[in-house]
Figure 1 (cartoon, one colour):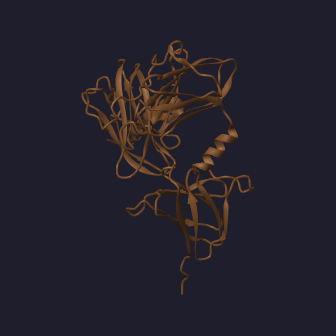
Figure 2 (cartoon, helix red, strand yellow; figure 1 turned 120 degrees about the horizontal axis):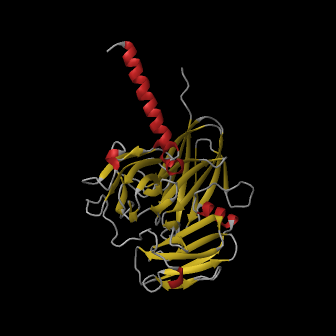
Figure 3 (cartoon, one colour; figure 1 turned 45 degrees about the vertical axis):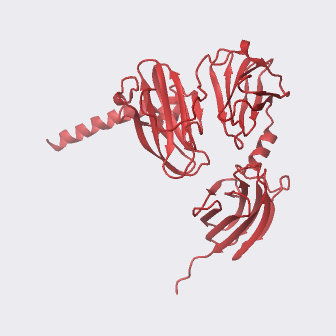
Length: 401
């Protein structure tokens, strides 16, 4: 083959690849742009025709996600799953070709694995895998039909995010700002009506029941779902106002369905939402005195402090005067299972750790530049109260002789 022929062939292949990438640019609202076909190519990723389940090894980078693409040529039931290899807590979101979320799950696969079973129309779908806390993880994603071997153990009957599962006319009415308490087995559905566009927060609380919330519109179209927002309690924040109309809220329980679950629908409060993020150590609070933060000053070599932690995270701020390595440890003094999260002064998360070195204690070691750093220490179980000892050590690079 001549050099000219090779160049022409390469050009044709390049154009074909460019065309394929262009087709994926808008897939699933842009989510599928960097996605990988779960069956190697589009033809091999049709779950309706696949003789067995299809799966991929997925590498999720820090605060990123991995996207697997698949399609259905016929309508039918599908199971989508993700499981971490080693440590990690998977979360999956399933998007249709237009970019609408049709299913979302955290732990329905059992332990920290993710799983959703639903009936899908023909079309192309994007299965996005991310880490619950934004940390890197390696895992498997699998898509199959019900007769295929599952990847995860599952939890028995799980919420199914499909059209028509929640009928407002047959649901228990709930009023904005007036919580209702009832077991899931007797009251699985609630309905409410909005007279005008309204941003909402919806919650379901009873950690022993482990509730799951799913929001639908009057036509039964899936709008949002949540499991384990705060501990095992669930919450959906619709920051963008919902249009006026009727809605249906499904409440399921992954635990004891006979226990009462307190369900509420109330107006969305941005300040309350941010306060909740600070309390959970998921966003860095301002340093203007409006939120309690303990100032530990400049880290010279080694210093420690004790904090009674339970419910809300305990926050500390430190100054690092020179480039080097910052080591932070959180050690339970008796009862407790601490979690550490580190932010810079702009609110960017730099590190997160739970259960280091085969213990329940936590440790972070990061290279840092001079600046201000915020550290959140919280309990895995926010119902536990205990003293956590926090240690800071700073190491500087060795000087050449």
